[in-house]
Picture 1 (cartoon, rainbow, N blue to C red):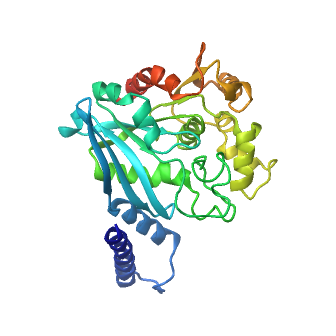
Picture 2 (cartoon, one colour; picture 1 turned 60 degrees about the horizontal axis):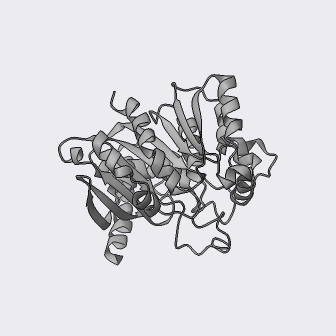
Length: 335
């Protein structure tokens, strides 16, 4: 593993030197070789994303396809990250669409692929599934493991602005930029046909990623999402820790699905949400799906919220309805 890390770091250095040398040779302006401009930084970042080395952690045949887990050094998060990818049997012949799944609090890339049973339906539909981890790991930032709902396993799919979190806790950029770039480069994926879904904290993540990137995802769905985090205890705790701004600052709205829905101005977006009626977190006021539904009605967003009798917040609930969600996305991914 050490060799992979050294090669990765060396590759970044070679790329940076190559870009600087090229610009020095071809620029008509006064050139300062170690002045890292924003455009030059973007070029380097793009190259780094696509040249990241992958290490296969596991590979298992399932429903005719392959469930794999890989690790890589993330330049966005500054640590080693794992992600899971299910490649359906169709991917051996052609490129396939992809659905990203974002997991909830305390989860890793393993929970969904081991408990939801989604591979069967993904195999039948010919769609890849990509599941990232829920936060950076192994950084040992003071306080990152003190509670289950902040820090490790609780990245909330935001880009932190507050020390000491802002350097590494950038899960939003990882999920919307670095990881898709890596997946599109390394696997037989149709980069213009992707959708996103998630559970609880990951449902919040899926919704904000879709709202903040109009047209990037063909559709979005969620299981029991944290729909209005600026109004619930989980969200207030996370946002207070990750953002410099205080609770009453409007910048929090940029990371809240209900607030983002109010100003969404992109292509039509078909949203499916399932919510168990016996979900304890629903009863505790952590999820607030009605707030998002009311806004969707006001602004004309297509949102179906289904309350499921007797179901809770667990993967038994997810496994029951995951086929519906995959078929929901396939309506838009196969066209």
